Length: 411
Image (tube, rainbow, N blue to C red):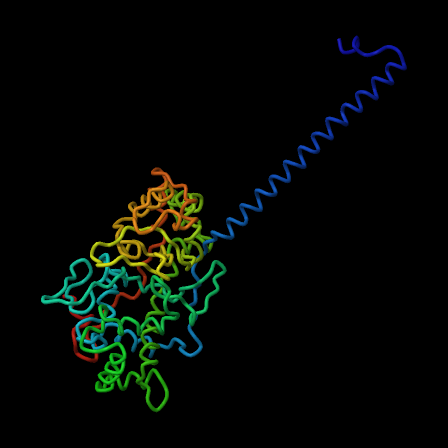
């Protein structure tokens, strides 16, 4: 049949051959154009995916911890800072210590929504105000101290410890500065017996009167007068900088041990990135350290709404590491479980705003890009488990140099 269709005349054969060749060339040209267009689109997609990967890049934490040049980490400073961390001599009423709201039993955070500082008794969810009481609640949920040594770290594992952002509104920089702020704050540690300008001098006066502290400060710091406000902050910061968990199963996985994450957890990691969680929760600490307006429901224990950073209802992205120890969640502890956190983000992405004081127009645009379904939540929560690591210092001193209650009135 094919031979029958071939033209018999030489001229016709020649014409037919040219026609066939031209037709084939036309087809090949079209195919070539289609291939180039397909390659161009594929290249554009790869570039977009690469840009997204760079934006949402997550890595293991560094194995080593950097310290400011003027506060190198030494065993003497860490040991001194640990005693100060547990000693209520630092508070105005001598009843609350740093450890009262940042206790190792709670992952150096606090198992309650917002903190009770001065004139409080008990630990975590059992902590209550003494009566009578005229001290307000601390406005915000207690951040965990663990891994704050890495605050401000970017996705390239770069950070400056002297510039590390602290607190939910990043109002101070460095652990050295952060350590002194609670001591100066009325509802946290200061109380009503001393003003903000008086309390640090009072604390230094008390410490100088304790011979054991005198010896410990001289061992940790040089100079004729080692007990100073600056060195007080440096000692506490040195201890806090020692509280790191940089060998979680996720860290092991990112360093090459693919068996460190289970078959149930690995899909959760991919979903975490795919649905948009990593837009803000990125880098080794799973935080971009930026301020975001989310519209979290207000905590009714507070008399006035917490307007956050620059009065914009913006708060810093918290780390996702050690979530097992840090419930409840968000800046005011209003979301009690990880599932409720994911449901909150799903609502926001669907236009369901839970805070009347924050209009939809003010909500962060990145939040609106989240595409989260109910079926995604369990795998993502399973992935969160890979970020837990209980290898931090959980040893509590038997006593502190002041001979006051270790950790304050927490029993």
